[in-house]
Length: 118
Ligand SMILES: [Zn+2]
Image 1 (cartoon, rainbow, N blue to C red):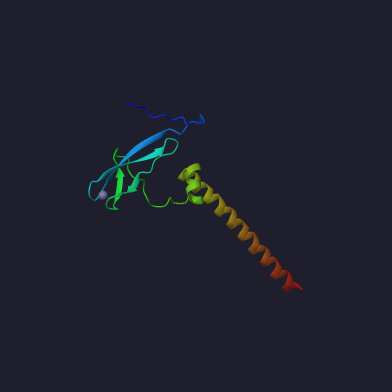
Image 2: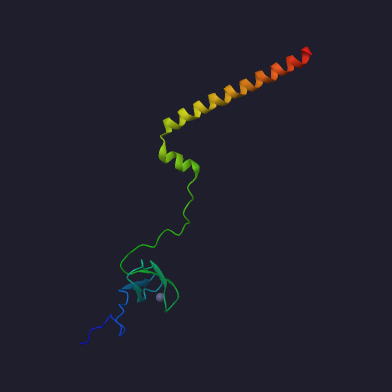
């Protein structure tokens, strides 16, 4: 029995391989594909016999194909702060805004009275 050499005549090591089995979901065809050991093998492959999608024979589930949802500012905020903290921050911010608006309003009032006095 001969052994497969993974060293070429140049003395270069070939990358280690992994053989992955797939089972076609429509007709149960079983086939294998060889991948480099350095990669994570795909979780699905098209069946070479009938073209149906095939899943991994070892039961590795296919990843959720839904595109990853982008994290919003809100998500990032929620990772850093509790709801109580956020409510507190919101209340503070509203107080600041109202104070600024009141200031602006009284400045406008002062302007109007000054102009009326001219
Ligand atoms: Zn098939």
